[in-house]
Length: 169
Image (cartoon, rainbow, N blue to C red; front, side, top):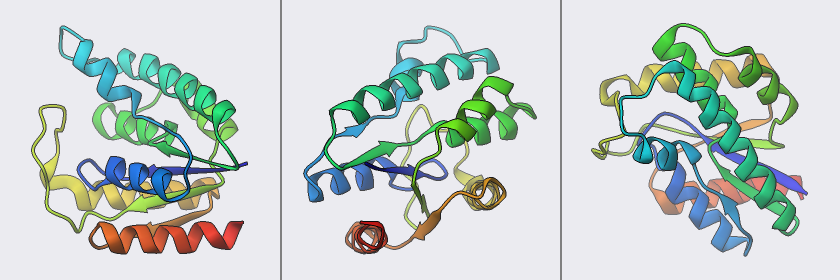
């Protein structure tokens, strides 16, 4: 089983790429739990909510992994929650950090910010995508994760991603 997590700043095409890859490889994928959680939340979120989001994300990823074929795609993973917590609040719950280390994907596809920003009520930092991209890249390097950067429009990102994934198979 190969696990591929698509990560990066907000509004960089993570969900679109994840769906396209799952269609290409005819497999299922895990959705971003934060969107579901935050949409149902009837108050502004707090740092403690990130722990609940992390637990939900891990649960969804585990369920999908058990049902998938030889490859599984994750629209985000605990790295995203870790980066966001540290960026917004200055630190991260130790449980999230530990679970990220224990549940690293086999390949991370880091989505570049070189596509237009799309407004969404759940998005917060349109002007900081470059800074966040650099943080993601440094975190991936620091963790020793296998990662590749994908750029350009969706067809280019999909072709790049397929090339990286096929090298692993």
